[in-house]
Length: 245
Image (tube, rainbow, N blue to C red; front, side, top):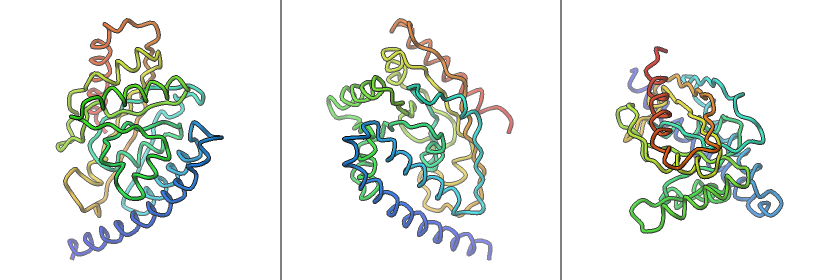
């Protein structure tokens, strides 16, 4: 009986997610022409935050808590760094109430509605393995930062299957040092309980927490210090993930 309830709840949630996603992403796409007068795409990002709010509240078994979001200054551009264990990370991160551009794999941009909305929001495509893609995405990220818009990156490069944080790649830290923008580590816990990588069911209860850690200044750092900064951020986030709930 419990298994049947879980299946029915998962079906309901998938229907709700699809309806909310189609509805809100359509509104985001409609705002695309406004980029001429809203180059930072704040309206489109705000609609993305509405999408996330609705999805976080369609399931009474989900509980989500945010910590430290007041550390983000309104008019400051940051390189936002987050661990990545679940598709639900995307939804949680929209709750930052701070506009940013996603660095996301190019294949997502081909998904109807979702991909169109990502383009309208100014998200940055990355196609690993294609010559020149990393360089192009790096240049786009740097341009957004120079315009005063934050960029969010998953430095692991992919979702974790186990919940354990993977080793960080260097690109985000090079970007932060070159731009002079502070790095803000963001630690997500519990999101894998909502929907794990490779799973299609998310009718299970779950409690997720998003913790924004203190910004780390990079202005004036030498590019040779990139590895030291990467290790510092990675160790900070690992320590936070291991902290008892």
